[in-house]
Image (cartoon, rainbow, N blue to C red; front, side, top):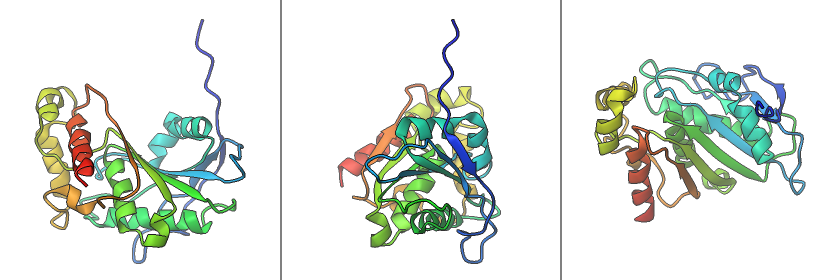
Length: 231
């Protein structure tokens, strides 16, 4: 028997309204959001999610089409915002950090959606999007950081240009060899620290790292976990 379809979140809308465009930056499509129609303890629990693509390709629309946002909204009983950021090399780092923080500010201020202002906020992202979520928290002022309950990373890309997992598994995965990753980070430009962890905030919000054993990027998360443990 086929598995029962997963419950779907309710798509509330999405358009490039310009409400969270960064100063001097292009319009951002950051108003795609889902709601499971559930209120938890009378407080909206919101997740701001960013997709991957190595900061050089992809868009928020890919996750919208894949059903990932539905799954987040239903499983977490959360309002989920799916946001875009400018891509490199046309827009080198820190453009991605600026865009991510602008989207977070727009969510917290209620400028994206006419919903009760959130008391809790989770930042999440996969692959390069996990680093973008880390940048958003690192660049936020204290008042914004205090609203970030957690950061969730799905097989994040955190700057390793060579590692055991990249050497073993990268050649089997298009776009994820050691050479591919080194090229991706190079396209972010000279402002990106050689050790990308320097662009994150040590001792910030609790961080959940989800790692797949057969993922070429697995050592990125393992290395970051050790860095966080060292404080």
